Length: 139
Image 1 (spheres, rainbow, N blue to C red):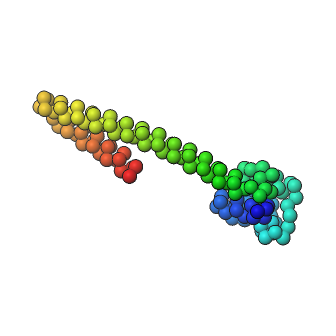
Image 2: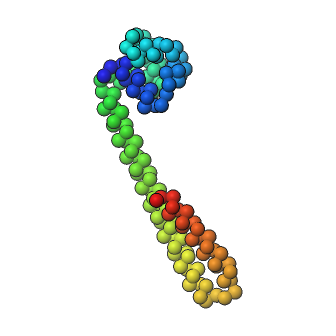
Image 3: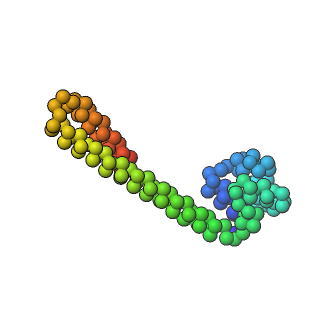
């Protein structure tokens, strides 16, 4: 795969139109079209502009190894996202467990305290709703 295919692939992956790339690179849209169709070859200046738009090197933009680079980045992104989701999940799991302990504590207090019954019931209800929200968020 060469420059022409790489340009089109990068544009597609980044959900950009030719005019978006053209505006960001300060190159005409028709030139971008010619590049993608293989009807024109870019100047070194335009190669640098296009590489900057996609945050890659000129060498990679011209390379046959773009697919490998993109795959490696996708794997790294997924690993990072999975780690963040796991950390978030563990945090919420700990939060839910803590809220359950508070709820149980209030229930035990209710058995012994008659005067504050309404307040404790309201607190239990709020905690129960919070637990439901957290659990539903990760289903």
